[in-house]
Length: 327
Image (cartoon, rainbow, N blue to C red; front, top):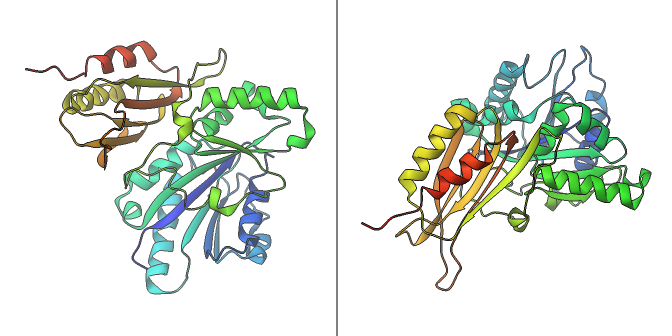
């Protein structure tokens, strides 16, 4: 019971299908004992009894406020209380799911797992799942910053209601989502049905252990005009100076941290037999040593930045200056 509890955040705009997905997860024959934190913007929620019937071990409702702002302090408190009950044997669960209100930006919720020391000692943020309504997703991205941020923070993007659009509309939406977030896998979900192994215990979001990047990470990303959120990929085969990179990124996040929603990468460090892996959320950044490079493996630094109005030229030029210079 002392191990860190993996946490999945389910987000997505109003009506996208978050609760349907959660119900399907709870109904699944997967062996997980799942606790749920449900955030409703309204003063009274309607899903608690239903979710308990579906198989939730414990459910806590957070009402009358958005989890990313007015009740964020309550989230840390509730996480602490659940951890204490679990340690005492009062409640048994080995995975936690947080379903946010459709109006929530996931960033502040994710940060809770790193800025609160007690929470960080008991929980591991496993992944952010974002459900996007294929029928209304384009309009929501046009009109709502929250919808853009939900896509930008995603480790998995689940497209719902795809039967309500034609192939051309669906392809256009997928392209737009990939432009906003070039590293998140995009897949269809029908009435919440998705293989559990693709969304639970995937370590898609983790500052606590070394990660490898998904193959989709290497996709080219060009910001879309009109969308506030975009992505930028940096690549360099020359060995880098770790000290210079840390100093540069530290300076960048001091100025642009609020805009830098997610950033993640593998670093090819001069003289190091292993890769360095880094990941950050806004102004929180971590770097750890990863696996050794293979004897014949192609070595390069690969980074992806996702955020609002990213300083692409500054990032490109600044990182180029972090190349190791002999002597």
